[in-house]
Image (cartoon, rainbow, N blue to C red; front, side, top):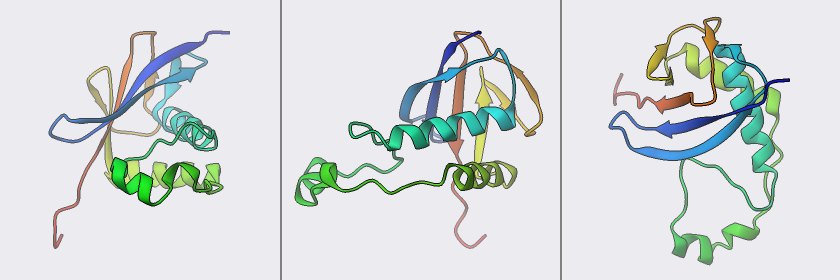
Length: 130
């Protein structure tokens, strides 16, 4: 069985990287749908670990200390609902998916992943009033 750890980055349109981590993938051929689902399931699993908390918005050190953020119970996340939400967001242009700097435009698009692949999720911000 092939086991790859590919680099996943969450970023902004301006190019700022919000977070970066390695995602284990068991195949070199995968659809965009499967890649998104793999990422969401991995993230849900990581959320349940006491030392890991991936978020797009992180409290400042003072906020974390005052609100005892580290000791707050982690919510139980429904992985299937989270996957469905992420797939809907992709279809509605909630984020752009880039694999090795190539934009992916369809969920069923076949991708070839290798050990040096970089997957970027770029969140799009809707315009005010539209």
